[in-house]
Amino acid sequence: MNTQLTVALIGGVVVLLGHLLSNFLDRRRTLRLRETEFKIARYQDFLFALSAFASNRSYDTQLDFVKNLNVINLMGSEKVLTQVKALVDNYNSPEGTADASWTIINRIIFEMRSDLSGKRKSQELAAFEFPIIVTDVSPDKPQRKKAP
Image (cartoon, rainbow, N blue to C red; front, side, top):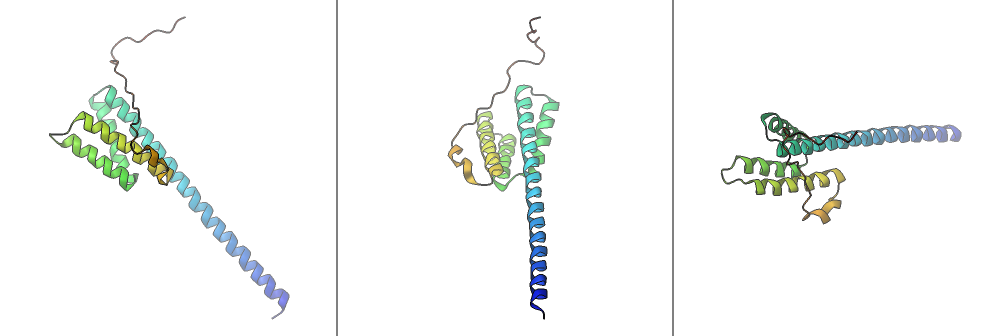
């Protein structure tokens, strides 16, 4: 076979393989990015629902919290799911306490951070108590009015 033809064929095959590999890696990176964005949104929804439920216990806020907790069962990492199970077990147990729930929620937040970072970058936060602030003002009380 002609040397120039062989070199051209090899070059064409290398370019084609390079393009296919690049396309595959780009698609994989895009899917991982979408998965991470989805997880961030679901984890944020969970924290918003938790804040609403802790601030204003009602059927609606509890239902919203439960729905968000159940969605995490679809996409949370194994360690997040282990902590979610601990939270549910504590809630359903006659010996379960609110203090234990807050400790477990702290672990859930830590595992969510670890899940999103992809590595144990947040290991230095393993013993950290995440500051969770919930409102203690009744939604029925009149709020301050802005000055004119």
